[in-house]
Structure formats: C-alpha cells, structure tokens
Length: 293
Image (cartoon, rainbow, N blue to C red; front, side, top):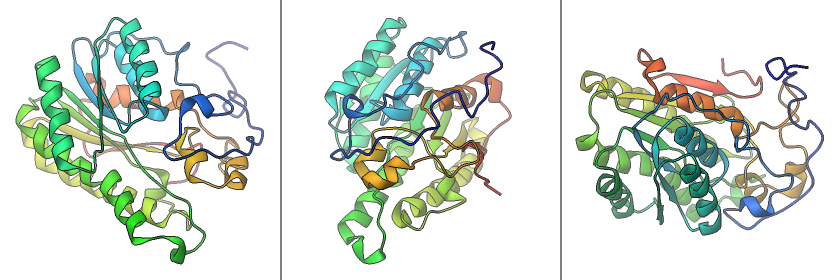
C-alpha cells in the first residue's frame, strides 16, 4: 500500500492501550506505547520560513508535534513548559536539528507575570512574534462532582483559559498584520464528557474566546483560530485518567483508535501559514470522527 493511501483505522494501533498511570503532568519517557510526533514523518516545505513562534505546552504531546512541524517549515520556536525539563530539551533538539532556533522557558502559566515574561523573552530572543499557539492544558477525570475540589476547578481554569488572556494581552503590541494565534480547544467543547466537567467547560470558553478575539483583531490583520482534537495519545492521558480509562482510550470514536500528536501538526501549520489567509474565528476538528455538530 502506498504511503498516500493508508487506511486511517489502521495507520496506528487500534488495540487497547496498556493500563498505566503517571504522576501529573506526565512525561514522554514513561508513555507506553510511545507517541508519534512526526519525528520521522513530517516533511517541511517552507510554509513558515523566517517566522517566530511561541508554543505553550511545547515540551510534549501535541505541542511537541507542532514544534517539530513549525521548525521543519522554517520557524524559530519558543517552547513554554511547566517543569518537564527532559521532554522540553528533547523537543528543542528536533527544532535545532531542523536548523532553527529553540528557546526554552519553564514556569507556571497560571501566573500573569510568567506569561508576560514568555512574551518578553520571545521578543528578546527573536526580535518579533508572528505565531502564538496557546496549547498547554490541565484536566482530571472524575466520576462525581463531589470529587472535584475547588482547588482543582481553579487550577483547570487558570491553566486552560486564563493564560490565553494574559498572553494575548501582552503580545498584542508586538503582533503585526499577518500574525496568527492558534488556540487548542477540544471535541469536549462540542461533546462534553461527564467525567471532565471542569476541562470541558474551559474548552467551551476557549471556543468563545477565539471567536471574540477573531472579531476584535480582524481590523488589525491578526487571525485567531482553533484546533479541536479528539482523543490524542499524550502524557496527559495516563497522568489524569484511571488505568481503566487509559486502556479503552480512543476506542469510542468512529475510527476506533486514539489519535497521535503527529496527526494534528498539519492543522496548526495550515492555520499559522498564508494558506489560511481567509480563515479567522474558525475551528479545525481533528476528532477521529466524533461529531461536532
């Protein structure tokens, strides 16, 4: 079978995943099976030559796949992450191997001052910012609302939605016409899981934030869009779900498997590039067939 004619149900394993558990926020090293971030498959074609990008949660999972793709398309990348230093250094290696500059910034994006520092660092290191990817996220799976503490509720909102406000507000003065913002929402914005009450609520908020910002910044020539992933195999999953949930992860979508981070990278490249020049306030759904209507 040719590389361009693969059965999507069999491109990656559709078998049950091994039961496993990690400490929050999880690491790529402990993930079994290993995720595909496009390390060997993504081929760039110069779509982002000379551009300067910030990716939150860029150390692993979807963020790593996007960082690899952006670098191979010609962009320098600032990788924002919490404290997963080994994962972040590994992602930076791929960026640098592509001949691009990688800047690592660790810290908690729940803090406005840290978000401001991310923008300041990007300007100091790159001289400009053309692409902002708000991707970092936190979730916990809970069977009952009584299991959700106030602290956990606050952490979910302050990780998933507050930093988008902080980063966009600080970045606005630096974003010139043609710049793009890409926010990671979720299929949960359309089809919320009852075990992810806090997470799903933030993803709905991200959807609306994106739409509002797209309208607000249209006259500035700054485009703001979303990618809505379905079940994607990243360290977030075994660190925030039970081993039983991990085992069946992705089995309930029409394609009958979890997606891989590499399968989202092209969507972010599209939204970051001139190929999407007439797209703003839009969402690209990458859900394995789960309906979003």
